[in-house]
Image 1 (cartoon, rainbow, N blue to C red):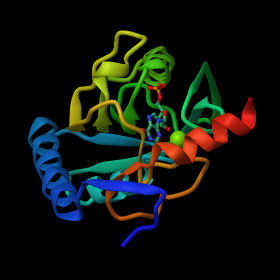
Image 2 (cartoon, rainbow, N blue to C red):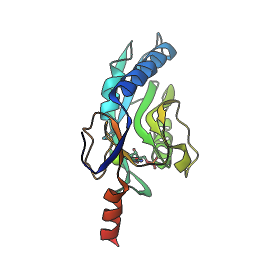
Image 3 (cartoon, protein in one colour):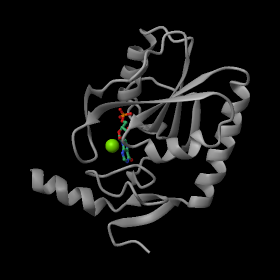
Length: 186
Ligand code: IMP
Ligand code: MG
């Protein structure tokens, strides 16, 4: 189905749908009777966010934020920049940040500190994927879709140089793709 840049499918559409439904049920239970603001991090979390939001029952507001720690390619610069801030204040609100993946932990460590300073009533992190073996900064998510090994993945919102976000499943990128980019950079 895919070209040779894709090594294999790691998480199928069915597995994604099942897990997203479970997370939605868990979040609906945890916030029963409470208002909730879902903050989607751009751009990687958009597909996950759209699916998850529809599995959550109750009063939900949505907002968007964009930070970047990756330049291009597969290695983090370690520097986090805010590119787009939230549209509304979060003081006194129950907030869940929806992220695509926790890798080194750098982005969310920064983002959580930044949002905590705005005094939300509560602040939790929900990440579609988690690569705990890659952590450089101590960081744990509150809701995790799938824990994965140290492989670079694309699809279901996740990109390599802005490509592959539209793939409906999570796929492992063939290392040759980024190795050839690396050798060009040297
Ligand atoms: P962290 O700050 O190192 O935790 O990086 C988080 C960001 O790196 C994510 O939001 C992604 O944009 C990107 N990232 C990390 N690992 C992958 C991957 O395997 N595929 C695609 N993007 C990734
Ligand atoms: Mg990215």
